Image 1: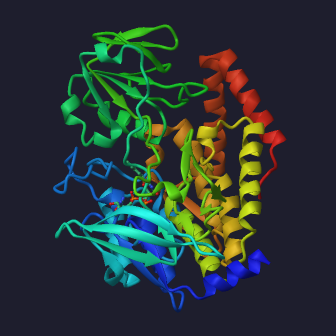
Image 2 (image 1 turned 120 degrees about the vertical axis):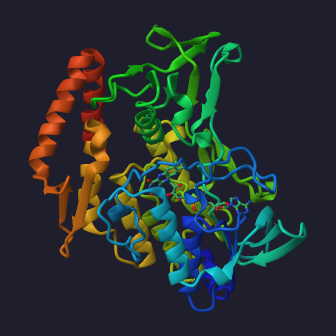
Image 3 (image 1 turned 180 degrees about the vertical axis):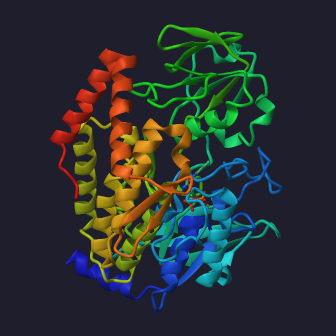
Length: 484
Ligand code: FAD
């Protein structure tokens, strides 16, 4: 009953709000426009599309006094090859490389906006200040969106039938609590404010965190810094050969005036600590009535990491991480648009809340910490994308994605400094050819060798920890359902 009512209410919708014109917001606008009778209205606080891909050397605040949004650094090349990074319906242009410079991604997003004629629907220099639900007697709420025109300083309020929140979540630094950090006399900087390596010439740098940003920035700094301490709590040391001036240590536990002590009991002097410790989800514009909370990095109450289970006319695009962002945005948006177009019927709000709670419980049982709940993982994401695709009635992700992602993951883990050297070609049948420095690679043979060497290295370096890590990885795999 509730289901059919939701369906018919959504069928009469017209104006769909979108907060942000980064990749997620553009993708939202593109698919809303493809549905007859729906019009997007996109608010973007800056004067450009592309969000985080708009590099600026500046840090701090912008000309409007808003915090600088982009965390891009000058030399960044993508950490995903363009063949799996692109939106499914809009490939990157042919190029000699698969891992492209950030300026190419910005151009790609501008071309996307042009190609799908999105610019007329974007209100640039418009900052969303406050969002409130307009509760109705039946069905999901409409949304009241209060916006500030940053040029004129004037406020206005729009009403939308549904709202997609696409404000990005790589802007507000997450900082760890470190004992006695106030005593440290050196520099502290978060990767959000890192731009280029030359200021670190001759310095002793602690890079805290060894996920994508930590490893990438460590490699950039290595030719400049005197010494880098790559400090992390990964289950085992990064099993790749790293530059000779990089040493791996456990996480920082305390600071002194001149340096740090680490979880393995060692200590070292340092001039700089560079926090590569990730970002916080924030939605400062959501009023309390929206009833959205963030608890230990879990955004609640979201059904399928996407739709507000009590107010199913509100969706959050791009909450999951360790994924291929653009394809994920595309599947999420198409799923949600199918809902608001009345083509897809959701469970009742109560059922969605129960399903979401059960999903979180299941993750906990599998040993996943809450703060990793939205971490889908590069391979597992494909199952989730398939689920959204089924709901939306669209084709699942291409088979090339799985092949390329396996290759990238193995090279990232076991040959990190050179993983961006691969160039992929996707064949018509979905097959993949990998080339490195122009020559075709016998990928299976090479990867088997890389894996064997990497595992040996893990055990050789720290036998007890390595064994326990490998044991729990195998056990985790055996006790979890295998995904196609
Ligand atoms: P954003 O790009 O952050 O866009 C959000 C937009 O919302 C911005 O334009 C912002 O101005 C606007 N906005 C925010 N608040 C408001 C408001 N209140 N009112 C109006 N407008 C607002 N992904 C990859 O696929 N490959 C990579 O190699 C890769 N490398 C990355 C490297 C770095 C350093 C970072 C930080 C991220 C990287 N990513 C990468 C992830 C990247 O964030 C996503 O690919 C994607 O661009 C995120 O898009 P988004 O639209 O969700 O967010």
